[in-house]
Figure 1 (cartoon, one colour):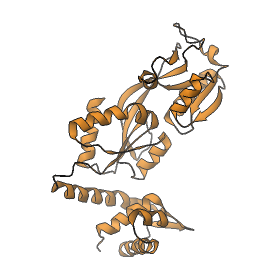
Figure 2 (figure 1 turned 90 degrees about the horizontal axis):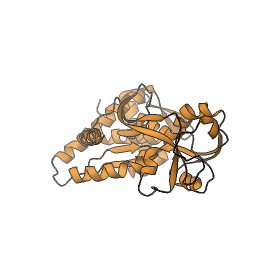
Figure 3 (figure 1 turned 180 degrees about the vertical axis):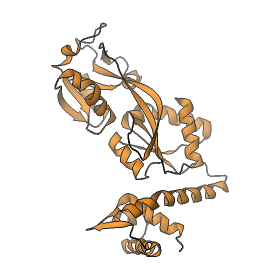
Figure 4 (figure 1 turned 180 degrees about the horizontal axis):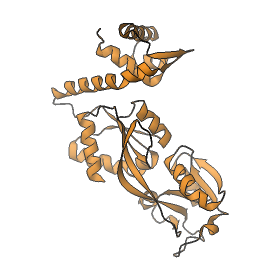
Length: 291
């Protein structure tokens, strides 16, 4: 029984896209050729790797067993290619991160890493639930996330601490030096990130229980939009202190201080079966030193 690297590449692409049509576009193959390749792999292994439903393919238990092995073999072959090509600096791994990290920490990290190593990883930014799914499906080699991902298939390592604060317009009446009570905040409107984001999870877990049915008037996908609404005095938001420490926002917003303080951990995650290439390990070492 022999499988080629080309067949493994087709398998991984179909496994990630769950669509023959999408996979054929990514592979520059016809849909029929992709389907035939999957059939050949299943014939040689003598097991089905996908469950079929209409035009979609879903990995079954045997397919999930093959994914980490195929992924590692393809990664290792890429490393062999680069080993003998001195002109290649960029490692072909994909790093994911949640939106707050991607907007307010990632640019500085990439700049420092490029100055040190001369190349940058591929980067993708999504909300926490999307990042989790991409890690589980081997679409990201590793990711920085807000909080801890409690999933048995993911290895989560604390990276650094982050403080969550209540952000208001600069001249908000509650933005005074002394801390305010939770009762003073119960009638306020809140403008928050969408469900599934790390910041929204932090609000619902730690602050919402203290406010007794808070009034969430807007749910938006970016903090730029949220902060513009806060600046227009449409409500308050609950977000990382990193945001208003950014020079672009300095002086335009206030922090409403409370007797309680809210902290979370930013974590580095990867699938426990994910093969980490030399480039991925280099990036991981840099992140740990930067923390």
